Image (tube, rainbow, N blue to C red; front, side, top):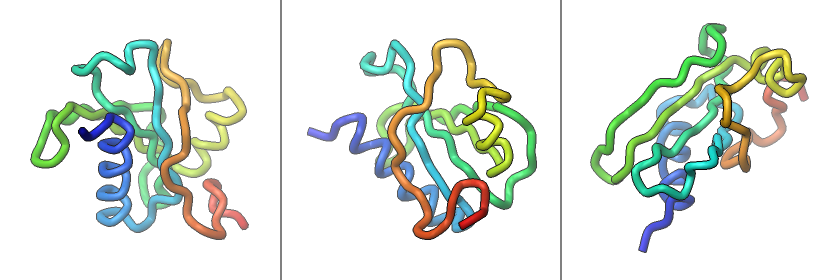
Length: 111
């Protein structure tokens, strides 16, 4: 049986293949995480995205991803603000485990 964690990893792997400028992908967790219909949420730190704050984008189930998903894409600088609490996720959302981090590169683009 495929778990939500397996699906999240598969989704993260697919996104980083399509977007090679992603330097980090983390899960976003919510209290409703274990409800089957709750979307899997990912935070993607992408060097080539435009700074726009926290803008969740929803996707329906598709192909090998049998549950809805939500992606929040931010710049490395926005990730630093999020880490310092200067930028906030929606109420009840919190950063979960890191699914991917570029080898030898910090999310802010530094060493």
